[in-house]
Amino acid sequence: MARSRRNAELSLLALAMVLVAAYGAIVEANLLDTVTRDFWMPAAALGLVFFGMHLVIRWLAPFADPALLPAVALLNGIGVGFLRRLDLGKAAPADRETLAIFAGTGGRQLAWTLAAVILAAGLLVVMRDHRAVSRYAYTLGLAGIVLVMIPAVLPGRFSEINGAKLWIRVGGFSIQPGEFAKLALLVFFAYYLVRKREVLSLASRRVLGIDFPRGRDLGPVVGVWLISLLVLVFEKDLGTSLLYFGMFVVTLYIATERVSWLLIGLVLFFGGAYLAYVLGGTVGGPFANFYTRAEIWLDPFAEPYDRGYQLVQGLLGLGSGGLFGSGPGAGEPLEIPEVQNDFIFAGIGEEIGLFGLTALLVVYLLVVERGLRAGLAVRDSFGKLVAGGLAFTLGLQVFVIVGGISKLIPLTGQTTPFLSAGGSSLMANWLLIAVLLRISDAARRPVAQGGGPAARPGGGPPEQLHGAPTEVIRP
Image (cartoon, rainbow, N blue to C red; front, side):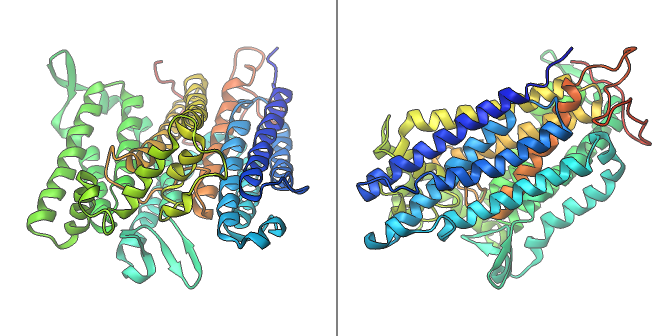
């Protein structure tokens, strides 16, 4: 009989919160020259929130992967701890010891964490079978396109921050709809590709040992490519464009197992990005912003106190951190513009060093690996594509962020999942984790007696879902 491993999850969750509390204590020791009696309170508040999520998983998804929640809780906790560290750094020395846990950016992030975890738990309550989502695939696809395009058509004062039009801003409230769009679009991609997998798997010719698809089957890829270029041009952000197009191409590869789709996707995307760069330098207009970002990327030290200032400060922060960092609370992350958002990885890196950043990346890698494992183990094609696509999307988003701050690719407006300040990113990524938990529960649940499909959380075999794909993709 399969074990649910919920006790292992609880133990790992407790360890994660101990690490978060230790991080907070070291921050206070370096910033305040003392450790206050309340240093543990942010970690305790987070622990209560995550323990509540653990109880929901124990009840509704008892066979879900036991490593997902603790890994994400650790990342989320370190993010809250670093944002509180920024608040302490901004506060007057006399006020630091009395700074409330719900004050400042760190306090808001703590509140957003509560809201995001409640939303994720609600999704587990509503979505008892991940295949049920396929009924709304076309509706979610349309909603995703609308969410992507809204910032592009709004005036800059309502949608633009730091050159990228990714937001909806009304008064003091702002939301990044693209964070939710990626989830909706991925569900549509998975449903569409399950239906069209056989057609898209057909090959017309073989070149250098690789089977390439028929020309008539390139339509969906070209369509998504054009949409991604529109995002690049009108929303002025390479990261979002790469995220959407990469998500579709990789999901297509998982569905068809054709390496040629990856090659075609790479050629299309980088060819389109280069074309946008050339047009930005000659024609200008809507391509000018991308051209400027590419120029900053090529040589940020050409204007280190003007256009290249943010990237230069981020690189200097990473460089000064060295292998081991200056220690939590002992660096100067506030010298980096937007360190709480786009450049939080650089700010953390200054204080925990290359080894610390590597540890964080390993935690992200663990979440991605567990998502891919759930996709491999689940029995239906739709679940395979959704889990694989979500796991890859999370990994790609981390790559886009780390690549931007380390000068591997041009800067983007993407947020670092679970670390950066902001409710949109936090809620969308916790929803992503909830879907992975649901799929991993279906994948790890013991097969019903008689060799049928996995049993439902409430017991008994699942009902056949109208329109829900059940065929299995070859491993």
